[in-house]
Length: 223
Ligand SMILES: CC(C)(COP(=O)(O)OP(=O)(O)OC[C@H]1O[C@@H](n2cnc3c(N)ncnc32)[C@H](O)[C@@H]1OP(=O)(O)O)[C@@H](O)C(=O)NCCC(=O)NCCS
Image (cartoon, rainbow, N blue to C red; front, side, top):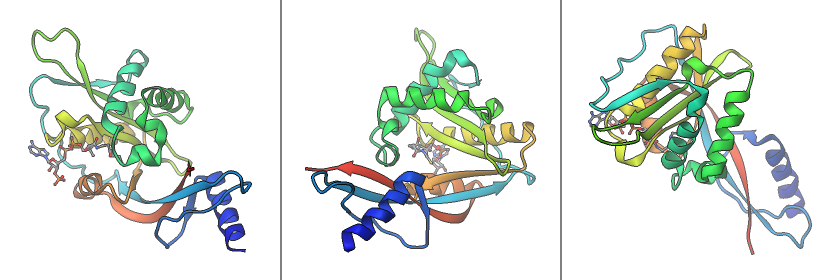
């Protein structure tokens, strides 16, 4: 009885990807046939929103040797590399396993930028290149989509570990929000994993407010 209930709930969550609920937690359940035991972990995530009609926060000036590049399809690999280096080993690589793989990040970039609701104006790549360095280092990325309610939806803000704590995440976010405005959008939204306290602090400091809790089911096989 109990496993049947867990299974149907988990099936729904796996199918939809999300369950909107007020409950929290992480559970283990059995899915499918009894010969295949599957663990399901539910990650609590928050939807945050912000009006773009108000004055946006000031972006700190870029420190020396950093450059922000607007979206250019030739930079897809650079975005994918910055995304991979930013997310591998982080909590979101557990929630979205593709973020923890180089190829997964590339696929994700292709999927995002091919969509007809892709917002190129809100998509930026951050590079760092000191004089004498042959190739730039890809150290930050952000992408934007227009959702069904005409919100500018932030996708995968990431700054690579050696470049954090210098205001670069703030600047990337500010550029993306300005890009949504240019595209005529009046509100922005994003989802953040509840355990990602650093990112939540950044978003709320910059004016995002929590409007909803959602749960993301992640299916893991175990022996
Ligand atoms: C979340 C993330 C993008 C933040 O990037 P970042 O470049 O470190 O962001 P910032 O530097 O703008 O802000 C981070 C902190 O540095 C502080 N800071 C900003 N400029 C600074 C400066 N010049 N000197 C010192 N500290 C500074 C900020 O006040 C902020 O402090 P807080 O943690 O108390 O809020 C980055 O940690 C990351 O990529 N994490 C992994 C991927 C991820 O989880 N992304 C979010 C998905 S929703």
